[in-house]
Length: 308
Image (tube, rainbow, N blue to C red; front, side, top):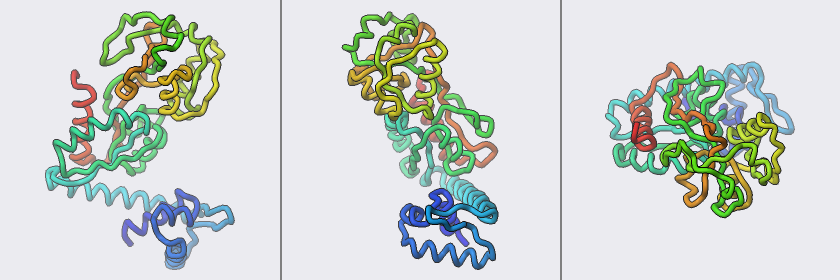
């Protein structure tokens, strides 16, 4: 048995379909199906119940899947330990990040890291915060850049920076006649403008989905201040919503750190004090952390928070 064959079971379980797992593994469905049948015969127990709409794990399958995850995680830890022997001359990091935040924060970090450690490859995995937390706990990724949720107690996290949730608008949007100069203005950390939250109800909004941090925070703000917003689109990705806001289609919620991406757009704090989330670098708790992963975390801090 090797980790490659264990990955077959993981793929089938996660895809809930032998055909979809075969596509993910770039192998023939018949070969994967034959492998599964042979394995189940050797074990003496079925791992999956076959159905017309896919497969589901049996109780034996759940035990085997847990074994597969733990074995692959242990194998990765051994790889990491051996990688350290080379003193970062070669190796790999698996980094998790949201598609939106990664698109504008990571390029300068990746460039700086590649210049310092040219032999270490950074493999990027995209997902939302909940997905990334789950991947960290399973040991699927080495570290992640995220806003921690309820699973934070099961992770090791280092605070990176406060990231303000603000409005993004086109410079010609009518709201710019209502904004005031922000007393907290610091180009590196807070938007130059703010608006009284109760003044935003008259404008049209473009929102991210309920299951995203920006989407949930936006709705929380509306509810807390008894605002019934005019919403024309309410289930867009964070990047799409912010792009439409910058383009003048309406107002959208975004992170102030996205100013690196939306140059020329206006960013407006919600109230004088604004509202922020803590962006952290998180790693699996209690496990082995490779030198490459720790070095990447250090480079991330140097690039994104140079004045700290």
